[in-house]
Length: 271
Image (cartoon, rainbow, N blue to C red; front, top):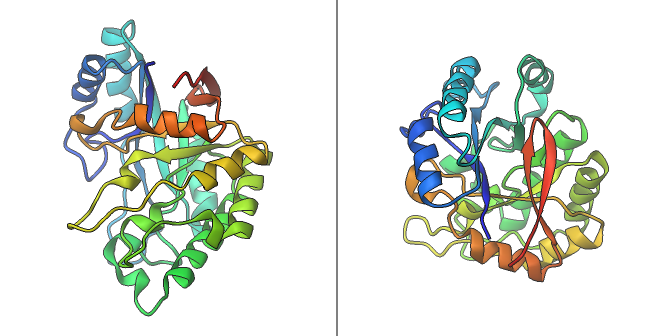
């Protein structure tokens, strides 16, 4: 089985130096059937912090150049990863509406003006307090915003957490997850399995895959799941997709999803 990597970054993202063309050639070599470029759009960050904004027209021109050159070898899709924050949803909407994308990922990178990546967010919070605030913030954002296709790395909060047991577990936040899933299903949004979430950091064990998350999503009627590597270089494109596709299959997810012209394309999960 081959895959579309629905979440990758190029040098149009501040934290990547890999060009669109380099990633496309690497995707072809690794036998992916598609790649989506979802560079960062994070606006409305606190004063003194660094946001992310790229020239969307330039990114799409680079993608189109690769479509013309390599488009018979794999699907190449133009996208964006939007950092959702409650105070700038209207501004985000204007930017997204002004452009044509294949895929828009809605992610949370800031929680109530604090960035979990930097660690300050977790200070003086228990794991349940930190994760609950994050889940409530995410639910609030997606409940009040519609112009996205995929719920990006729902477990982002666990990546950088300082706690010994890092995994965001369904059993600890059943009501939050159920609300989260019901909003996604009602609005026709896909849930992302982001394989970067399961990488060790700073010598610490990584969060673990919780099958109960995806089993419950399926029980509630969810079918659309995307696989994204969150690659910022060519080495991680399609990282561990076979492993996690097989895990999804065991959870009852029969399809893998990617997006073209903002419409879901479902491919049978054959693993």
